[in-house]
Amino acid sequence: MKTSTLFSAVSFALVFCSSSILAQTTPDNVTATIVANADADNIDLTVLGDTLDAALTSIVDVYESASIPDNSTTTTASRRSFGRFGRFAKRDDAPIVDVHTHAVPSWYKALVPTTGGNPTPSWDINTYLSFMASEGITHSVFSFSAPSANVFQGAPLPTIALARLMNEQAAAYCRANPTKLSFYAVVPLPYTAAAIVEANYALDVLGASGIFLTSNFEGIYLGNTQFTPFFDAMNSRSDKQIFYIHPGTPYIKVNGKLVEANPTPYPTGNIEFYFETARTLEDLTLTRTIHNFTNIDYIIPHVGGAFPATIDRILKSAPAIYDASFQIFSTRFWWDSAGPTYYHQVAGLLGYGIPASQLLFGTDYPYAPSFTQAASLAAVKSSTLITDDQKTALFTTNPQALFGSKISS
Image (tube, rainbow, N blue to C red):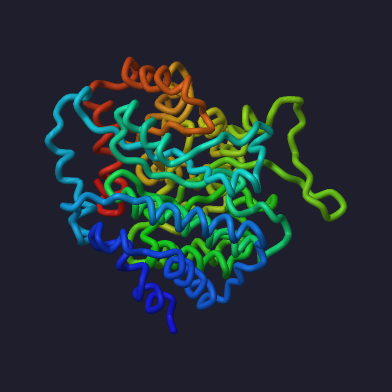
């Protein structure tokens, strides 16, 4: 039986029906559906041991504690209407869409106690929703952060199983908060065939709005031919695909083992993540991956990290793709603001003539701590590099143009 058929028995009702049906969910039917769908895709969740129990408990808790308003709509189309955004003419009144934020359920933090050399932050859904309200954020598109599902390096079975549980957890948060949250799905690369299966399941069954990719997967960068079948499969889908390219820890192989490749005494997430963005974008560009697969748009965090400083150095040595690459950077690349990027850094990106229509807002919460958020938002709002109308677009209509009906409002 196909995954979508199995899913329709229980989970379709959980997603799209009214609060009365959501309230009738039980641990048994949620768990049974998740396990059956994984079995249908030949995914053995039991290889995760105690993590499986903790994750399933967390997912069930989300469904059981959810409260959907009685007047909530029952169709995907009506939930995903962005029409109301057109009413806002002033920046101060405009809703904010956050395209770069993360979920960290406690069971995932237990697997990944440090991220980029820093302690993995604590997180819970209620605190997160309160944070959104405090910042004026009306909708967030979130993901898990690095290392994504690549906790068990070199071990395909637990990596594949973990990706499925992460996506089920993300989908549960979104179903419980359908007008506030959407998610990017994780995939178990470098295992390309399994990644294609997981991406299709997350997009078609769980309703993911895009795909989350780290800058490298076990030391393999995104332009590597090993990943070409994955790009080809996603590019061949009927609708435009959105890839979120997030930096991860750099690795090199030493005697067949992956070793973190940070030559400094400072945490990898502080600086190396910026260079990881540059490395993988260089790879995607020089391998012509971004040129060959034209049905994919890319969200680039931190207004490009270190990449803008390297673009001419990279492309002046490849004149045949210079103009075409800039065309892509200006149309199919979207650059988020996460971090302290609008004090000065964004000027380097805009100096290349990247139009303000490609700018997006991101918080990187909770990895960028709460006490930094108000100032980073204020820096965007007070920037002299873009106009007030362009700021309204950055917060609201640019993500509308990118996601369209892929996210709720």
